[in-house]
Amino acid sequence: MNKILQNLLLLIIFISLTSCATIFTKKTYELEIKSYANTKIKINDSIYNLPAKVNVKRSRKDLPIILISDTVNKKYTLKPSISPKYLYGNLSFVHFAPVGYLIDLTNEKRFYYGKSHFLNISDTITELNTPIFKCFKNAKKNISNYFTKEYKTNKGQINLFVSIPWINNFNYIPNGDSQKNSSGFLGMSTGIEYYHSEHKFLSLNASAVMDFIAPVPAPFSYEGEAEFFNSLALALTENHKFNRFTLGYGVIYSRNNWRLENTEYDVNIPNSKKPISKANYGLGLVANGYFRVTENFFIGLNYKPTFYNINPLSKFQYEHVVSFDLAWKIRLKK
Image (cartoon, rainbow, N blue to C red; front, top):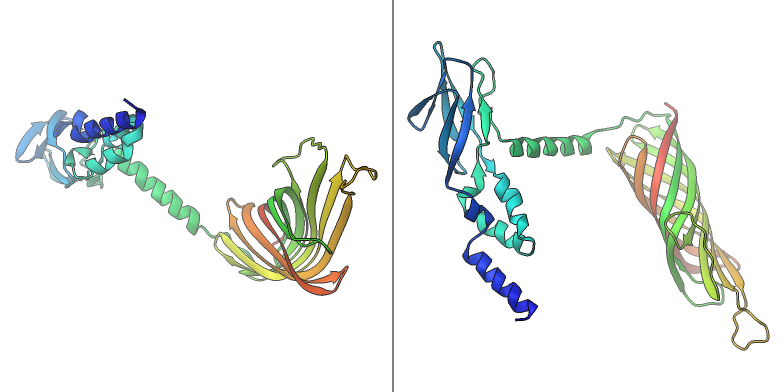
C-alpha cells in the first residue's frame, strides 16, 4: 500500500472515531471545590459539604453555584473554557490536528470549568475562570497594553538616530549598461531628529548600504566575475508619530554605485570582462515607516527611489534602494 493510501486510510479512521477530545474525554468529570470550615456548596439542586469533589457535566454554558455558610450565602458563576485535552490532545495526531479541532468544535466535551477552585466568602470575586481562560485574558490584555502604550515626545526634543540597514534591495541602470538588480545585507545609517511639535519631527539622515553576501560581518572571498552594489545617500524627511508607529517622507540625494570585479581577467583572453565601476548621482524621494519594538529599538522599511540623474548624464531615470532597518534612538535633549 502506497503512502497516499495509508494516509487516506488513517484519515478515514481518524474521522470515524471523531477526535482526540471525543475519544479520551467523558461527558462529566470531577470538579474539586474547597473553602473554609463549616461551609457547603449547592450545584444543580444538590448540596455538598466542603471540601468536595463534584461530578459536573461539561458544557459551554456558565455553571451557577452557591456557597453556603452559617451567616450568609454567596452566588458564584463558573465560566467554562476549552479543556487542555482539546487544546493539546489533537496535536498528538500531527497530520490530522486541524481536522480534529474542527470536529471537536461541535462537541461540548471540549469544555471544562477547571480542576479545582477555592471559594472565599469574604472575597468580592463572584466569577471564577479556568487557568486557560486567565492565561488567554492576561495575554490579550498584555498585547492590548503593548500596542496602546504611548511614548511621550516633546516639542524641541532631539534624538540621535542610528540604524543597520540589514536587508537591502538594489535596482540600478549603470550608465551605458542594462538594468541590474541585487539583494544583500548590511550597512550603516545615522542622523538627527528634531521634534517641531509633540507628534511631528524633521530628520536629517546619512546612510551607506551594500549587498554583502552574509547577514553578519564575515570573511568573504570570490573567484571569477562578481557584481557588487552599494549606495550612499543623504535624506531630509518630515515624520509623523502615531503611538508606536512613525511614517516619514522627504527628498534624497544619492550616489548609487555598481562594480564588476573579475579575478580571472586577462587582456589576452577573448570575452574576458574587465573590472569596472560605475556610479549614478541622482535626486529622488524617500518614504519610511518604523515600528517601536521597545523604548529605544525600532524596526522599519526605507524606500529610496531616484528619478533624476545629475551625473554622469543629466536625465530622468528610475533607480531605487529598499532597506529593512534595525534602528535605535537615543534622546539627546528632552
